[in-house]
Image (spheres, rainbow, N blue to C red):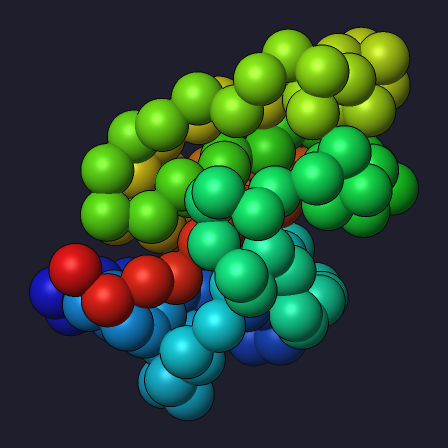
Length: 125
């Protein structure tokens, strides 16, 4: 799906998303990543949902975003609270959704100037 959005100068936006990829500023990415309006962290959770660890979420917490949208792949799945401990203890907000919804939500929040991050698992459907 194409995600048409005016891109403010220097801001990372998700321009498309589909099976096996997410496009950041028009460049396709085929592995998990963390995205903020100013930074791109690769890889992240590249082995998929089943292989998530507490360390993966520690990496997300260290980004310091006010709110993080977590895309869990082609469908919404909830990691165990033990894995989410770093985010919970950071006191920052997070929402869990499928990756397509996380991409749309990230773009909306980033476009509003919010301090947002997207942690995205990318998988073929």
